[in-house]
Length: 141
Image (cartoon, rainbow, N blue to C red; front, side, top):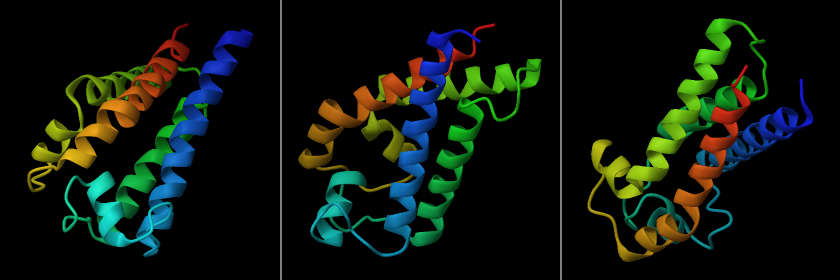
């Protein structure tokens, strides 16, 4: 495997695994790095009163950990594993392109506020784009 592909896989693994760890922290009840649950909810769910329950948050954590393992090559190099990495990369890029407001609306969340829209534009969408490109490009044979 080329050095470039290893770097791309490391980026995908690290980003998705970090997202999984952060969601696990939130599911435990900690608002870190926010100072309060209200601030966390406003920043990540778009509404100060719309923080998902711990079960939903753990589901996201599990999906991120699983995605990280797949991005790293944990399922090998077979056709199905490559297809799955491509799917994950495309899904992450779709989230980057559509934005968090669309994603939260699809999930049935209340209308998102200004703080979330700003964080999505400056941080979340670029992060999803980098992770999506990393995972997608690392799936090339």
